[in-house]
Image (cartoon, rainbow, N blue to C red; front, side, top):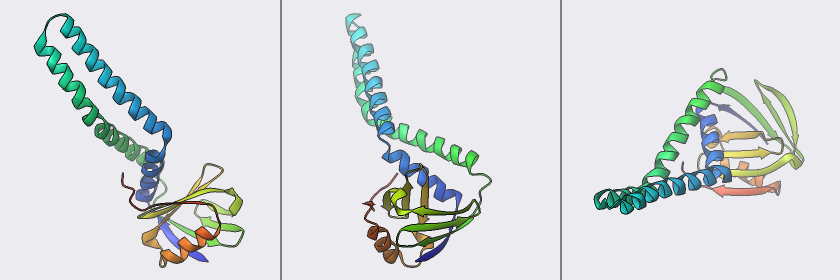
Length: 176
């Protein structure tokens, strides 16, 4: 099976957003930061309570509770902004890039502006499918990005990828 498609800067951003959202380390940092912010405001509330300043005590308790709900979306928005900046800096010279992939029984042949390679199926760690993309994660920390909008028959490609009997995650409801 052979497919040809274009990779754009937007595809690289989608890739960065997806893998960042799936990162255990990023989730851990977000949780830890939320807890630390909550603890900071609660300590301020306790300090105000000790000083017998009830208005400030109530204020800091309310802010502490609100921080649990407000900080995670703010963190997510800041992270997205940083990823957009990262993509603009690191992918500025890439432009739209034509890619050819040929799926064979034991390997995948890849050809693009960056070069040619033959990847053994055994090098594939996992395949993630979202509503708009297939992400084929390789053991050497590289990922093949396949935008579904560029593929004529997505079902045939999905069947071919599943035939490799590699971990296949269908995350069709994934949203940043």
